Length: 248
Image (cartoon, rainbow, N blue to C red):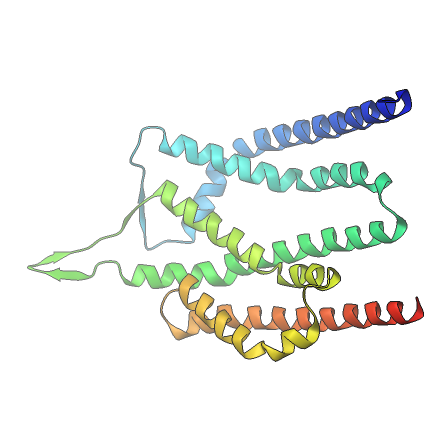
């Protein structure tokens, strides 16, 4: 390998190491700070399910729950710094057009993920927990009843998984934008298959929500709005690609 290429590779590796060290330090500091507030966060999350009684079934389960919450909160708090370090590492290798596109995708993608998680936290989870709480205390005959005693670890898993799932679902416009840019999708295909998308959205809503119409509609409507926004963005991008091809 020529000396200049070796030097360039070493400088890139040193730059990568520096970015990783900064990100790791920031994450550890954020996680440590969040660990001190883990009990407060868990009490707040548990407070959203007032109709349930929570237990832990292993000696270390509650401690593990505190640590897990600290890790998740640490990632959230440190994410802006980690994103900045990632951007500063990849930015020099991009053209001006690629920088604009990458900055848009990263910013818009993060905003959509936060919006999806917030929607799950404020809308989906309250409805879901209310429905599940309605099953509590049901009689199974012979004077016996079923009472919910939920493991704190299971509850946190459900809570986090729901927020992450909706954060990813709200990334639909970004995915469609990238597929359109790659030439895999076009707006005509999206419009032609709209009825299948609507059917699929309601099937997904029925799977991930309790079996009541209100919850399913509350989930399906934002997903359909996201699809229409995605179709509109795809149309704009597709027209730009056609115009560029004609002028080129």
